[in-house]
Image 1 (cartoon, rainbow, N blue to C red):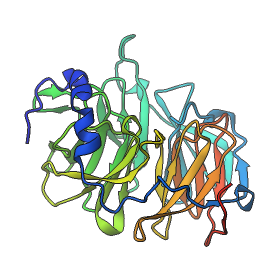
Image 2 (cartoon, rainbow, N blue to C red):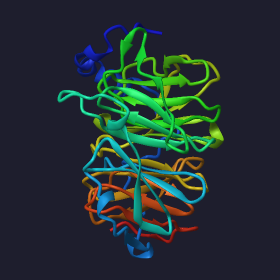
Image 3 (cartoon, rainbow, N blue to C red):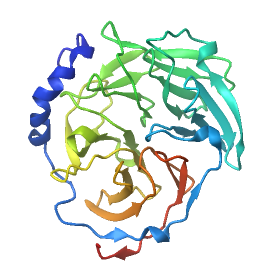
Length: 324
């Protein structure tokens, strides 16, 4: 594994290695997007809005996490240090679950920012705190806060964005500025780096049935995949879906209960649906606004990026129509 000293200085290397990343990785199993795919009429989808001012999203950065007992946790676009909680059936009754400003110090140059949240199998809330670069864990009662990781190889995380929880309980943490994905064993306190080569990670998502980590790379117009092992060590990745040369920038990622992958495409105002087993695109959902963050729970697709969070009912089977 390459040395990761002074990770925050890697920005310049990204430009140098970008062509190697674009053309040097295997592109097996990737749908051929050079041919225009079929699309799904967006009129077949029930598109609704959550009428709650506090969960307005900003450019796809809004985050949701679904916990036990029908609880939903939400980041706050106005109060970036807060995480709210509400029940699915009463979205208008949101309460503050935790305010990190009551637990942690911040500064003008490093304000507290909750960039992503997840709920683990014990009902605890994981928080990627971007401002000071920490992976936090909060008890289900919000009475205990732990710092699970804040550095690698003696150097503090320069930035962190997305969290994902692996099948074996490892935590994955993306750092776009550093060009890496950290892999963290929270029980042993070990921190490693997943990727051998520098990448530019956007959203990250576990494909559970295959023990794979799926990563969007907007800057390189593609979605890549890591085959995960048991050890905390770097592994190779390969291209999964290639949006080049159309220069389409994938944003959010989510899997439904049938294993189909949903990829949001930002200012193209659309979501594409892929069957990874068949290595093909099976549908397209047109959206009214910027298609940003994606979350799936109980057969509902939640879409961030517009003025309000959208709810889209997932279809059991899609009606394929000719491309227009």
